[in-house]
Amino acid sequence: MNNVATFVHVDNVAKRWNGQLGVENISLSIPRGAFVALLGPSGCGKSTTLRLLSGLELPDEGQITIDGRDVTKAAPSERNLSMVFQSYALFPHLSVAENVVFGLKVRKVGAAERREKLTRALEITGLLGYEDRKPGELSGGQRQRVALARAIVANQPLCLMDEPLSNLDAKLRASVRKDIKKLQIDLGITVVYVTHDQTEAMSMADMVVLMKDGQIQQTGTPEELYYKPSNTFVAEFVGAPPMALIEGSALPGFGEAARIGLRAENVEVAEAGTGRMTCKVSECEFLGSETFVGLSHPGASGLTVSLPGLRNIPAGEEMEIYFFDKDLHFFDSAGQRLAQQAG
Image 1 (cartoon, rainbow, N blue to C red):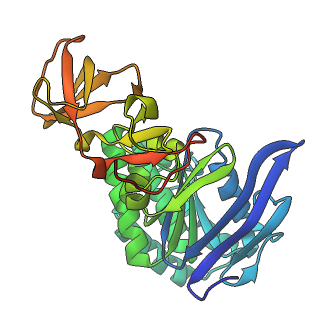
Image 2 (image 1 turned 30 degrees about the vertical axis):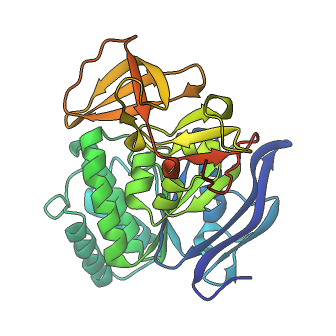
């Protein structure tokens, strides 16, 4: 049952093609004004979920409501939403201004109102002065801002974004990421944002929906997914570096735990003879303020320790590590999270 705060509600939605899984058992409650990231690897169903929300695909099962209205079978134009695509979807022969107000002209919005909305959208996106340029005269970041301006003038309460930054370089991605988050807060709109980049999801979203193989693995705040992953997939997908997983047999004394998770920031280098595990250095990754030292152990995968500054430790060198029980995460043989337990 929807609660008052829920703006978008997806109830047990499924979509299949020729019997092949698209998405299954998708249920979501999105509050008004939230920024929600649909996160996951390629082929996990996140774009399909977005297309189901938009009306570009219709579900085989389940129900979708937006603002209390059943839109399960409604056309995209009837859902009161705007979309921003990966490809920008700009008309190359139209100017920036013409691209931004194209939808308003189609809906026969008056010229004075179009001008007013255009000026505000260009001001918000930093595009004032670019009105007469064609998309071919703009950088990738500017083109994406035109697509954002077009979504702003639509003035819809829900905006769906499908990997809008994937065509930009790393520096531009960081810049436009901040623009999008600021826009969402300033306009008070609800955003559902598809990405395979966990940095985007963790830095922008209030709520992250992590998917795999067409199903939701965990829904929660970025902090919840990082500090309380519901299974080993979430543990290894979220975080840079990802959580290390240690076989229960390599760290006995923890009851039902088949695998034990450990974050790099909770690993310390120990003096010889005082560590809890003896590993071998496999690689060093220098990142400026710190170096991630990759460690190999026959009973573990992804073990990493973070050391300040530049460290060049030869591969194959032995290193003992120490960690506290309170920082461990426990998973059963199926990979599901177990209640925290002391050793």
